Image 1 (tube, rainbow, N blue to C red):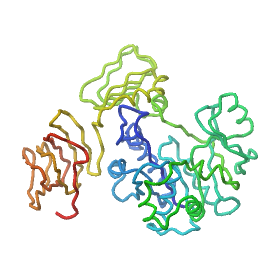
Image 2: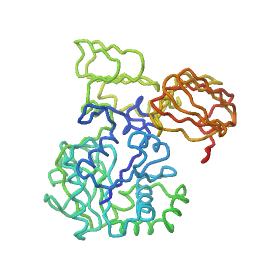
Image 3: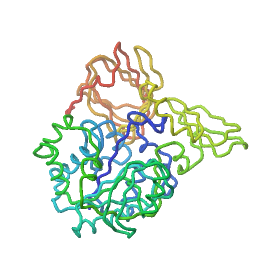
Image 4: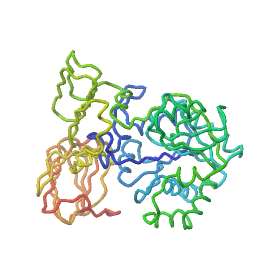
Length: 437
């Protein structure tokens, strides 16, 4: 079986740690078995391979997330890149075509689609593996994994099965009901729809060709921006009459708000934080280089990053999205395949950035048409390439990079660099990449 992990999101729900280029799945608030901090995507990827070390995984994601995925999972992870966001059906259709035409899968191969951001234990992925056997038995075209509800929630859609068996046919689907209706659904054995689907690759590709006029992966990729935005539920699931569902009763949490995240994050506090003895049920995450002191706080969450500071009760934190949307500041932190950058000063005609590069990584060879740059090497060793000329660099070196100069840097060990950008129009998209140095 091949798993497609859907990695989307625009970074509003866990602000200020998440932003337009750093969605919630990349925030490191969990810990692995060695006590090392890890993100949601790292945790999920690790859990899948803990259950089955041979499992093939492809991550379907947008261009803005590729660097963070490479940074956290390495360069070998399989990625299907969406040219733009078009909701879950186009994303899954593109990923299916990618598996067929690029990865070489066959129409009879089983594929499971899973979200990248649930908080679960390993039994979740053990259950996902069971979907393959059900799919291969051929009694249905589509097999879902439904979550046993713990409360009559209004936040999720429901799958109504024909009976309460572990595997059953699906009677119908419902949108998010009110609490009283949810109670009635649960009495009928209803399950939360958590967005886990399994099918034979050929089935999904046939559905894709019915709804989209395309030849193959390359053709679909080329016309992707013309596709209608539509969910997989609406395009496929709700129109399919032959569906089975497998029940899952293990751990499952949707950590889409700070209130939910506070229940599962590894530590009550992270960063330079002091809580006095009167604080009750309070979580603080501090990514700034200044301390946060909390006194008398009860049932609160405090989160601070270069993008901003949140101070909220846990209950109200779930309602912050419309307020965050009013904040129009550029993202001040991002992960790249080679490391991270943090904006430490942003003026009209200059920007100062702290760059941290991982050992044995290299920036792309590129140039800027409207800005110059100065690299101040703070620590580490490496080499720079300026217009095809190589030069070794170490702590204390200063590299001048005029406008339209092709440049790159490779780190031999962990490197810290202060980059100063100068120009009348400093823009993120002022970048031309080159393949050869």
